[in-house]
Length: 260
Image 1: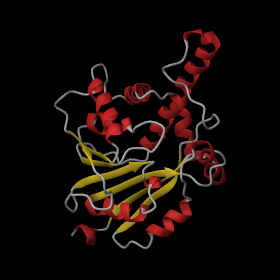
Image 2: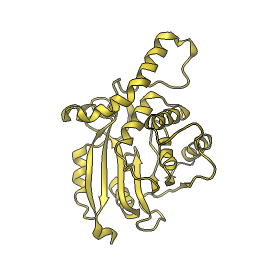
Image 3: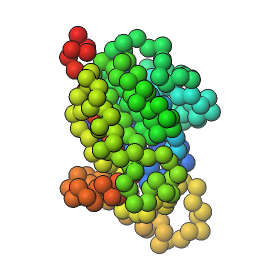
Image 4: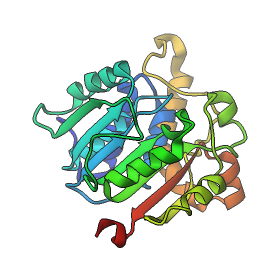
């Protein structure tokens, strides 16, 4: 974390860019990380559980931002190699004394965490890996004290499901499933991650040096304008967001009756 000032928005953006490059991704992944950032709760010093790591495109290393904001972080997944890759990158960015636990959990519908253990339980590109995704959401709700946030691939996107090969859901479909659960309220739901380039295009740290001045110029322009483009997403007309967004997101909150 040396060299980063986490009270400065631009330094946070730079931190997320460096993380996306460290996991061998690029500006497209950085765009996604910035888009997700505006959905998460802004509280600091909270206890967070990352309920699985992404199925594809990065390994969710943006979750380290929760730690640098003063929180404690527990990361679970069912794939030992993905967890090992996650841990390897964290060692290059974080102090050894951060409150981080990385656990291999085989059954996402029945974890060993007690009820109401975490202030925030979140996942990105995880639920779509399983046919019993609603049971997994129920487990996320059980172990959460208050917030539950998740992102899944957007079924109504014109291109992303086809290029990514990911199982996808419509926002209406997920909302209808969640409305049957009395223990939560849907506080916010919508579309996120609408980069201004076609699906499947990315810029990585492994680019050849012979790519030349023009390509580097384009890359630097996108680095400069990407944070602004992310902020503009919320102003796109709803049909356009529905058609272009890579992800749908849902931000849930447990009812007082459940927590009581």
